[in-house]
Image (cartoon, rainbow, N blue to C red; front, side, top):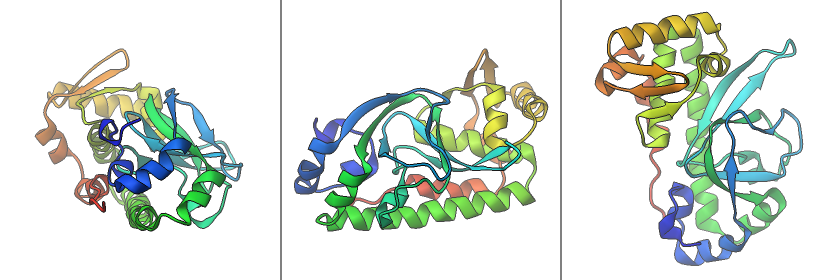
Length: 233
């Protein structure tokens, strides 16, 4: 496995020496859409570095309802609790978009972190960004209309995929946003009518990104910052 072939920005930002040290522990995996990687309070055996996949974290209610609070793509890592030696999931973790990832066992990752100062620093910086994302999205869910939140969510997915095409159904969009399917369908139909997106049988394509950004609330500008990762090699 060569670092130059990867897209995850934490891994590609590592020095050659730190990457060589971590590489034998990295296992390539293919993740399926809707797959649950960890439930709230459950043992979290692996941490994941998404490549072409997108992983989301959810707040689960006792009545079975759930809402997405965090999104992780090639800019980050899923399983940040390993950074502080905690192996139980603080949030449930699911695969939003199918694709590839690299994973490492949590106990191995904790051990490798002890001697990898640059990796630890990068993860601490990412942890700050992830916390900012969660708080911004919490405010967005309370203060902004569902249509704006949907536009933000689609843009965030597109950013992490590096593509305008997204394989997603109305049902799953509603589940991630914690809203009724009918509301998502109505908003998506309006976006389609305005020429912002096309949508056919679970295949959504962003047609006019600038207009979709205009339809989003101010939160997209703040949340988009979490996709950027500085080089720390």
